[in-house]
Length: 234
Ligand SMILES: *Cc1c(COP(=O)(O)O)cnc(C)c1O
Image (cartoon, rainbow, N blue to C red):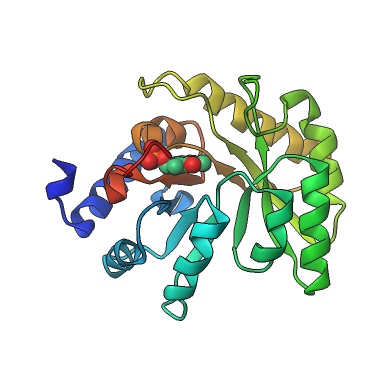
């Protein structure tokens, strides 16, 4: 069904879902930015979606992202990094992404800070939180979020813009609504206690974008519904 749609039709359908969710909760569609998650999809697919009107793309793997970004350089695309970031890969991505969604430790934050500061840059980042206390899952626990956010905000090579949430997978789009609301509350509490704006809340994927928007998402990360199924379970 989706595979029969053109990139333009897929993009319009996702934008329409976001707009309707905004209308239901009294938000403006401009408050929500769509990150098109292009991991595993080739540069040609990214270009086709760009030509349909999408400028911002999200990538998860450094080795895959860099050649793709290189191939599409000069076309006016913007990129976010949304995958797990290994410390030894930070040097390859410094200065290349407008936002890193997945900072979750002071050690990782310090490395990004050093590489960015060395280039004379300030790297916008999000703190990834793990609100379901999932073992082996990226993200800091809610109990550590304030200390970590405070430490990150103190690094002048970084600018902390908000929080990112990747909840446990559940086919029921309503399953994570409570966690989306908790993420918003945590963001609001941190903004107050740290005296920072923290405007961004990155949450919601193909199947639960509406719920995330209704609970306050400002960045939604949609892959499958824009590009079709990924070739493997990534
Ligand atoms: C792959 C991925 C997405 C997109 O998921 P879809 O279900 O394909 O929309 C969103 N966020 C992160 C962190 C991802 O790795």
